[in-house]
Length: 181
Image (cartoon, rainbow, N blue to C red; front, side, top):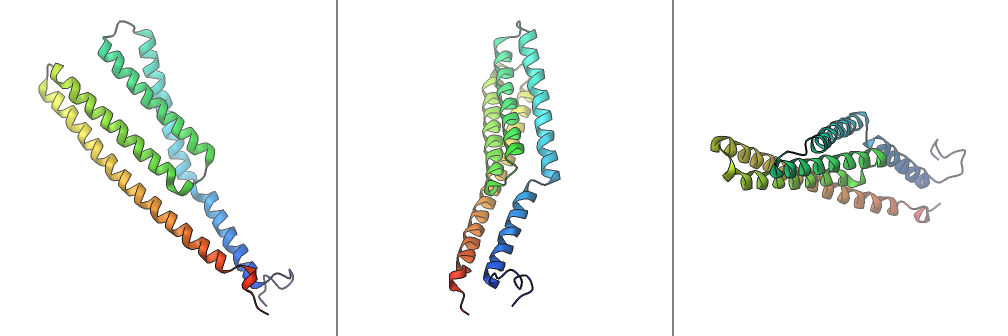
């Protein structure tokens, strides 16, 4: 009989399963570790500051051209989206099988597409074609990085889901009903 179960009357398989569950719970608690929390707090602060500045510009400068107001409004919506995302991650503090990473990558990809399409749409009105081309090029680079991150986060999510399924099978195979004296 193993030392952990000697006084408790529990079977060794029950002790292994209990230990496995305790390890899994500890990993879940640690998943949103301090560096991750700090990064999400920083995202929250930066996105909130950006949203505040953009909202102040829209409120205090009603004479801005319509294209500028549209661009600022879109940027405000993006900033608010990042605020909501950061609050969601900080409130849940759970990994959710990397769902938060996939969501962030999707948001980054969508916002990069929006930026690139917007820059390309406004480029014909630009008086500086080199600057307009540089802005569209920047959007393409952002889109490539966001797309790569989306593929990586989906791959990680699939790997975590596969690992969870393996662990569930392992736990089910260690049920006390299979214990023989």
